[in-house]
Length: 114
Length: 114
Image (cartoon, rainbow over all chains, first blue to last red; front, side, top):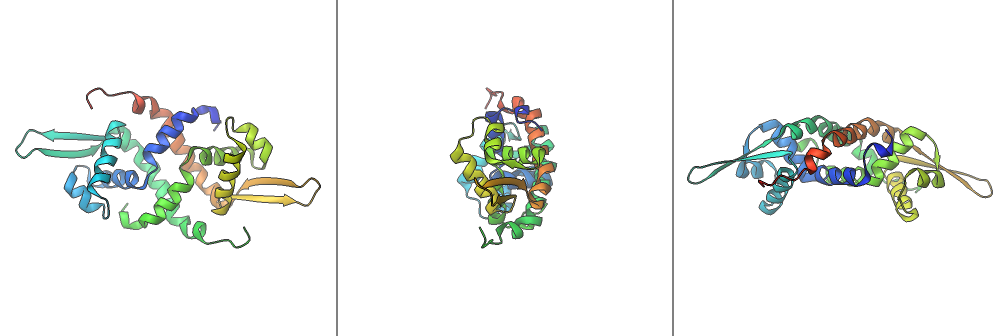
């Protein structure tokens, strides 16, 4: 994999989207639940603030990983789903999370010779 | 993939290590070159400062993804290689980078309806 396969800035751009914890959890939750409303998503993602969830969804939507559908009802109904690009990222994110689960204890174990 | 499979902080800890652009490029370069010295690595990673490369290597070494060998010669010779944990991460990083290569143009294309 040569470095010039992807431009530095492009890689940084993409890594910045997908590499924060809440984006990962939003993507994984949407991949499981398929269609989710805001309040339900906030319940599922214990500890996330409304502000953080709003920002995460807006970032993911703005970068075409998540789709937002507004239904013209009173009160308005809003649903979130993964886009096809978002869905295509899920297996890679699952692999990284699984790698993290398998290695985090060793990684975090303090090495006194360093 | 339930959220409770990995603790929030652990996932954040791991994501923080592997999700910055230079860590990704260092890991990919070491996976290709197997054994690399500092100056060679700095040449291969166009645009990285000595300070940034030192910090990236120290972070990756401190978290057991990279191993550093010092040879008792004059001047001292220092070589960097991926650890077994580092090597096990490579396929997942390559998949994410490949996904980024395939999707970054679409992701970055500005959507005027948002």
